[in-house]
Image 1 (cartoon, one colour):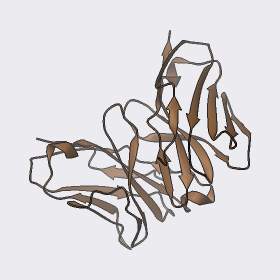
Image 2 (cartoon, rainbow over the protein chains, first blue to last red):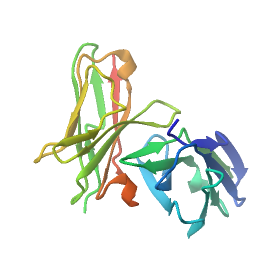
Image 3 (cartoon, each protein chain N blue to C red):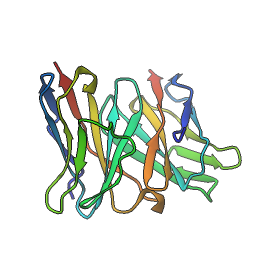
Length: 109
Length: 116
């Protein structure tokens, strides 16, 4: 399979806690991206990490990439209600961007 | 700079009719991707086009589906003789470079096709 597999499929946490989502894949990649989707709307790009990078930060987001284990993680610190959404990892390989099935994150008030 | 524009946002078709979904990429973007999403599922890659050319259509059903990205005008995803199983959200994304050149994709808000 060319797509990434997110884990867990669903996650509920209290507001203020940190949320961690993982993505595993099987093929070689050029880069790995994370996107957010709010309630069936269009996807919003969060962060791109290249295959030769190990960690990237953007605001409250931290992404790691371990190419030896073929896995990536997305950490959202100090979660907020507005972070409730589906999060997808996307593999960039050759000419395509392939999405996984996503993690549905629900932030509890 | 307007984002990726998809229209219509909602489309209802009877079985057997044709559905035409339009996507205007961001200004300066010559790479367009189409995806299909069923409820509570991820996006399934359908086709990748670069101006006037279909580069990769490995995710497109062999029959009834076609896509184009003409020199002038929006990209069109065309579904002929629609069936109930075609009901889904169809998303278009554009980018300024190929996916393997470390570029993000910018998404439209999608077209929700309902076949009745």
